[in-house]
Structure formats: structure tokens, C-alpha cells
Image (cartoon, rainbow, N blue to C red; front, side, top):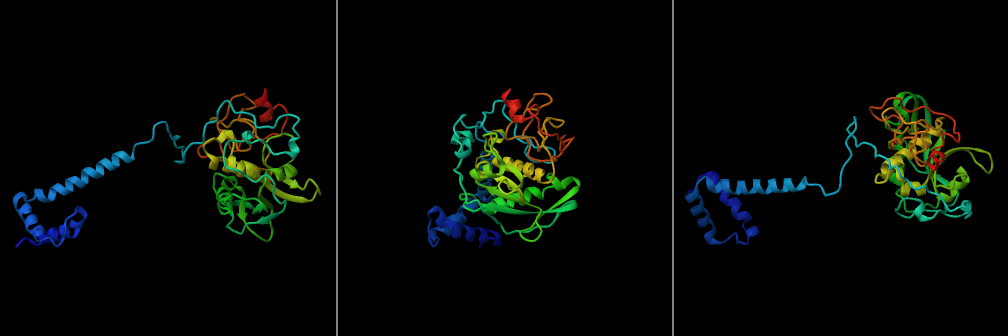
Amino acid sequence: MLAPDRDQDVALARRNAPTFGVRPDDPTLLRSLRDFTSRYGWRAYALPVLVVITVLALMTAGGTKQPAGRSHPAPNAAGRPAPPTASGNIALKSDQPGSGARDTVLAAEALPAGADYTKVGAGTFHVLPGNGPAVGAGKVRRYAVEVENGISGIDLTQYARQVQTVLSDLRSWPGHGGVALQRVDAGVIDFHVTLVSSMTVRKLCGYDIPIETSCFAQTDPASGAPINRVVLNDARWVRGDASYVGDLNAYRTYLINHEDGHALGHQHAHQCLPGGLAPVMMQQTYGLKSAATGKLCQANPWPFPAGTAGTPGAEQPDTPQNSEIQIKNN
């Protein structure tokens, strides 16, 4: 009679025999197994273990290999991937002069390649349901997350979640005192974060510079009534910007933080932060060149990126001399 542990091993082998094409009720199976274990002793049990270890080692070695030509940015001080470095040659995104740009849709090549987006919405808006705790210290500013009726092709649950997640992050505006932000869907609302079709953006933000952009609209241009609306262009939400090529999520984060910065009273910034990152209030959609030095800043989506001094950056009124789009054209 086999020892109890050998009996268990033989029973296990019989249960697994169909995997190897052997019938479990084959009368020669048990005898063959006994002969094998009697002949080789402990080696009979070591052999399958070594086979398994070898297979696992090969699988592990294959799983760590990265595709050729791909690289990942080095993590920053917080352990997150570093912001992408902007290209020094970013094509200007504008219509041809004299094309009646205010009333026409920008050509597809004026934006990075990507999915289609809604050009014309209904011009009315609805609040996406959702509430959250106040985040930060200071005066509580309550915001609602909205979308223009008629927009399609965008995951609105993901959109609302990203707005709330960004504005609850301590690298965003609530992270360094002075203001707390809270998402609400009813009651007192201080400002609205609204995803808007590209043609409605032109009505709310103007179109002096023929580029798909976003804005903070304090009043309705038609009626003059206060609306306090952060206007996020769906063209940019879907396609992003050349400064953030390859990282649409980071550009959306920048878009939220920049335009909500205006809702909180922040002006534009036009100089790189110490270390070279762009301040979030720089018009990074237009360009990344510092008005002070003429050098390119690195794209940065956060007001208070981890481990960076001088945040959120010096803010100044816009002038022709410090405009990112003017600097890029010169």
C-alpha cells in the first residue's frame, strides 16, 4: 500500500488525467503511477514542480517586455507620471482668413485628430445629478455640472465624474487654503461647469481669435444677465490640444482647472513656474512660450503640482505683449 501522501498524489493525478488525454478509469493508470513513483522516488514529485516553475519564469519574463518604440514619462515627486513636454513646433489652429469663421465650423485639421463631436447644440442646458462634500478650507463655492442639450457621443457620467474628481484633488484650487469647492445639483449654485457644443461656445465666449477654445462667461452676451458659466468646449473635450498630444485626460484636467480658475477670480499667467512647468492659468491651448524669457514651458494641468515652487504663478492682465498666441506668431 502506498503511503497516505502518495495515495493523495495518485488520486489527484487521476482526476487530472483527462487533461492529458488519458481516461481516468483506465485500469493501467494506477499501476503505471505506482511503478513510476517506486522507481524514481522523490524525483517523481520534483519533476512536475520544476516544470511549473520553469513555465512561470518564462511567462514572467515575457510579461515585462515593453513594445519597441514606447516609453513612459518618469514619475514626479508624488509618484504620478510627469506632465508631457510640449513640442516646440505646434501648428496654429485657425480657419482661413475671410472664411466667415464666426458662422462656420472649423476644419477637422484645425484640431488634433480624433472622434467626431457635436458642432451645434440646442442652446439650453441641464444639470447632471450629483452631490459631494465640500473640499478645502475657506469660503465654500458651490458648483453644478451641466451639459448642453443636444450633445451626443460623450460619456456624460465620466465627464461629470472627472469634473468632480479634479475639483476635489488637493493639487486643484481647494488644495492650498482660501476656498472650498462643493458639487451640488440644486439650491444655491455659485457657478456652473457646462459642456457646450462648439458653435454655442462662440455665442458665449466670443470668437475674436478663430480657435476652438473655452471660457468663463460671467454674463449672457445677449441679455447681459449673470450666468456664471464655465464653458467647456466639446471639441476640446473630445480632441484635446497639441500641447497635450497623447494625454487627453491631462488636457481635460487642465481645461477644468483653468476655466474654473477664472470662475474663482484668477487672471491669466504668462511666465513659466520655477523649474519650467507652465502655470495652469497660462493659455496653454494657445501656446506654451513664456512672455518673460521666450522659452517653452512644460504643459501642466494643475494649479499646485506636487513639488513645484511659485504656484499657482504670477497673474497679470492680458496685453498684446504677453498673449500666448501673439508670442507664438512672432
